[in-house]
Length: 101
Image (cartoon, rainbow, N blue to C red; front, side):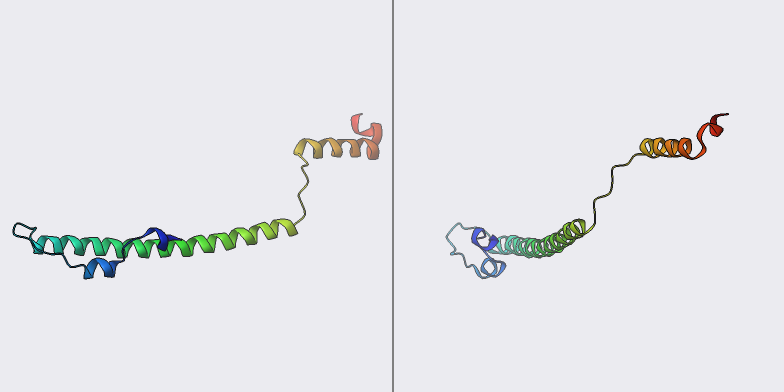
């Protein structure tokens, strides 16, 4: 995917030869600049590789989490209010009017 979009490799930049003219650029400056470009290119390629590996790892973690979520039963949506109300009704049933005397 990325290889289709990138036109040059670090090796191609390194091996590129330029013709010199009468009033051309200083070859030493061009070489220094191309060396910096090559280093950046290599750094970008390493970062892309690292991010692709991280992306793959995170995708696997997501798949595992989704699978775990499917295996675990859904938790009930009981709130504290519901629990207290049920407890109160149970107390009324068990203790009757003795509770409120």
